[in-house]
Length: 97
Image (cartoon, rainbow, N blue to C red; front, side, top):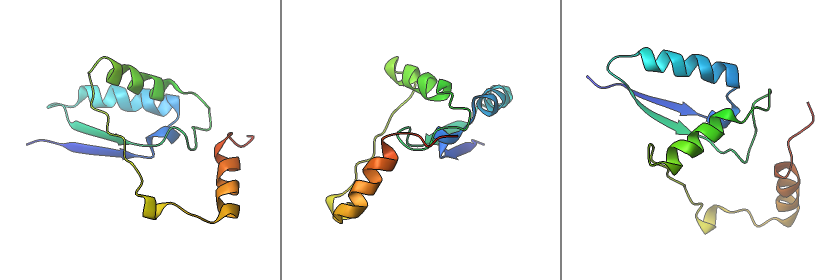
């Protein structure tokens, strides 16, 4: 029997939680299939540590993990300029803690 685990909003995971999860996942037998879904251009963990994102980039760079980048369809993109200006401002920097 195979186990499939999906982690959504992975970019918001704090480093200490990731270390605990990584240890727990290594102890599972058989090893589960893991899918991590997230956007590292959006909210970061409260601690602000990027070690999970850096680790994932290294896995992909060395062909140890698959990476799929979803593309938005043009119909899904907003056209309201005020909304676009607002989204640009809030996405360009993290909020103060």
